[in-house]
Length: 187
Image: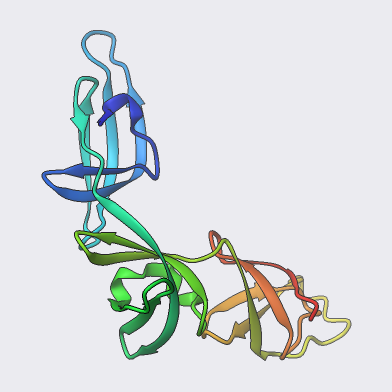
């Protein structure tokens, strides 16, 4: 069981039997009275966000969440298919439940799938992924217009800024937390 003092960004709590994640947090201690904890939270089931203030004596349950190692198989329109690596059971997760993870999913990638009441509600991709550049405009040597990056498209359709020496066909490493280019991958 959590108390209001345990609240922090990224904490998953249960309110009225539903899982929520704290997306922003502020502590306020007025001159008189109890401390207040102002939070912004997002429902892990439907994605709705809201703000709520808690007092220091409020308590929260831990949500009954389970994480399983799964492998991404394929996608069809807005459905993404995953397979449990231990028992070969397959699960379908809708695109709106995946968020930014869609930018980094490639066939056969191992991910952690989050379950609530045996229902898949989210996916965690590895912190760093290596993706192949499928479209990159050539960089004109001597171009001094000011920008030292150029946009490229990777195999998942994600567009990001990279240094000018990155070419089509190169494999690059991307930080999935920020969506930034890290380095070229040597094969």
